[in-house]
Amino acid sequence: MSDFQAETGPEAKRVADDVAALKQDMASLIKQMKDYAVREANRLSQDTADKISGRASDLYGTVSDTSKRSADAITARVEEQPISSLLIAFAAGFIFSKILTR
Image (cartoon, rainbow, N blue to C red; front, side):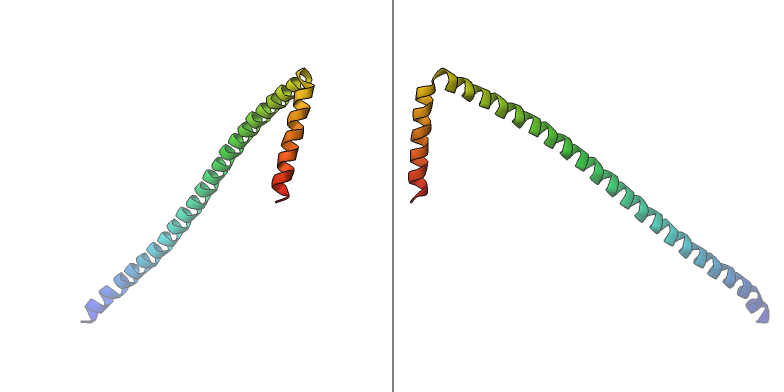
């Protein structure tokens, strides 16, 4: 029986050492996977923020161009018909003042 214990003692220690090494390897692998996931999430969020920023810039440019064209058209219309523009502005002001005083 002592032969069996002598042979299993070192083998059991090697198995225990292998299990401990496996635990460390698994912990290291889990940490690497977590770090990779965090890096990828940061990269994806930065890409998304860049896309949103680009689209917002495009939208701002479109709105700016449209409002400039509208302002130019109104200016031209007022210059062509100053009296009717003045009467329309007066009527709009009168209507808004009546709405706001209620």
